[in-house]
Structure formats: C-alpha cells, structure tokens
Length: 280
Image (cartoon, rainbow, N blue to C red):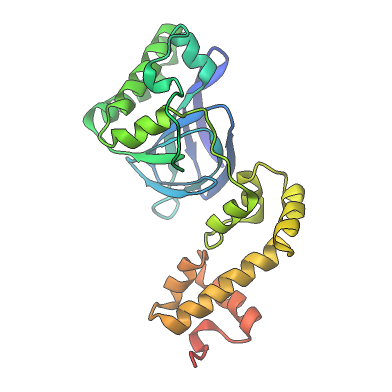
C-alpha cells in the first residue's frame, strides 16, 4: 500500500519522485524508453530484470537501464516501512536539457556486448549529499523550477559518471536506452530457482499472462506451474542427496521464502517431507 508519494515532472515526464510504502508490495516496472536511478531510504528493494536480480538495502542505490523489471518492496523489521528516492532518465528530456548536444557518454555509441542491465552504485559523499539535499524539495515544492530540475538532472548524471564503480556505470549510461534482448526461454531459465510468480515472469517477457502461458507451452511443452515446480523439486532432491544444507537453506536455494510452503510442496511431489526424505 502506498502511504505517501511525491513527484516532480519535467517536460511532461516524471523525473524525480519519492515514495513511502507499507510492505510487502510488488509491482511491474516496464521501462521501455527510460532508465532509473533508485536509492533506498528505508527497507529493502528487490529489483528483478530479464536476466538478473539485485537486493538493495537502505542507504544503497542502483542504476537500471531501459528494460522490463519487477520491483518488490520489503521492510527490514516487523511493521516497518519502505521508502525510496528515484530519478528517471528519458532520451527526449535529456536531449532537451542538453540542447540536442548530448555528452559523449550518453550518445549510445558504445556497443553493449555485455549483459549488464543494472548495477549497484557505490556510495560516496557527493551522491549521498545530492540525495539528502534534494529530499528537502519534496517538503518545499514551491522552490522547484524547471531550471532547478534541469540542473539537478545534469548533476546526478555527472555524479554517477564519476562514481567509484564508474566503468560499469559508464557502460550502462552509454546504453541507457538500448534494451537488451532475451528470449522467453532465457528469462525463464534465469529465474527458475527464484521466488517469482508466473505473472511476474510474464512481465519480464513483456507479455500478458495468457500470452506468456501460451508461448511457454510452445517452448517447454508444459504449463508454467508444473514445469517450474518440477524443476524446483528436482533441484531440492539433489541438494538433499548431495549436500549438508539445512532445510531452510535448501528452500531458499530453490526459490521458496516460506519453509512450510516448501515442505508441503515437496511432500505433494515426493510423498515425503524433506526432513524425512531418504538420501539412499
């Protein structure tokens, strides 16, 4: 549930926003023509892309290029909140504020041969100060002007470009609006052992749930629920037989947040609970 939300728009696009949310909360985040810098103020953010997953804790930041994402918001304590500050980058807005003379690191001239679509941003004094200073404007919106938003957008881009893990960030910045391409099979296999729903997988594939299920059947000759459950149970059995991991660790390795749910699923599949499953 969204408790509080504030945004600032520039040339018709949301460029700065702050949200306070009561977790757990999840939402699709389709960014076909935008990129995003996200800083977690409180709680935990789980960002899932087509080929990756990053867990971002309070006072940490992440830079995401355009693509399909699922965002999950969690709290670090019972009845805690999730709050975050975000900056959005759009090609048309950037061209406007730079008067169509984009800096070289934003000109999409670097060929992106890697599969980097998001990266954590190393914390530093300048970025932290930028965030803290900007948060003041959410409480004083009358101080915000077009000139200020343009200036602040340019400032955060330069701070990111010069941050400590600059090489990866430079690669993402130079390809902010060039989406990576993945097949349904690649996306499914990447997230097979993660805690992700069929609806969320469909989001990552940029498909409706019904279309995703239809294409999934064509690719794997099975429905998503059966196929994913089967793969997770086979992996769980292997981990029980070949490792000394505890049941809760095996559940986590197979993409289950709830151990009892894992145990019940295992029982339905094998006829025994994992705690009593024979390794012979």
